[in-house]
Image 1 (cartoon, rainbow, N blue to C red):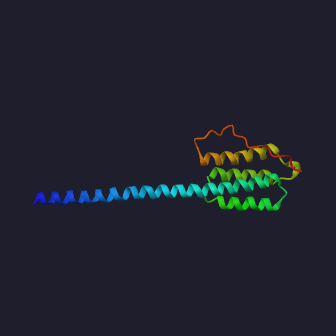
Image 2: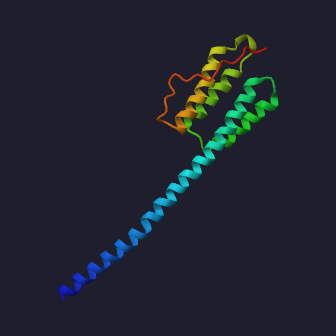
Image 3: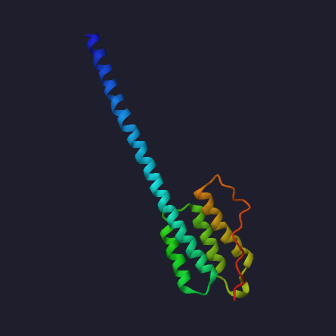
Length: 140
């Protein structure tokens, strides 16, 4: 009787091993496919966000450019890293002041923070500490 019980246990273990050996690679493959798909979407959203930002920076008085930046920010916010969202808020806060109180350096820092946060999210191992995008021109 004990011999039969051992055979049943060995059979169950073999069946479980067969199921796991077939399903584990499938699961890991699907998980990696999902990560790749999310990264593709994230990169597309970053392209849109940075395009909207660049358009807005080139003419801050253009309300269409501001609208495009806000739309691209809203689309990206579901996928992007929290540091990017914080950097976008810093940038918009730096732009929400009157011309006489506007701080060019604060705006430049906020813009650079956005690009650094994007680079860090896409490739955390890339060197970015001395990365400077550009200097925003004086507001007219």
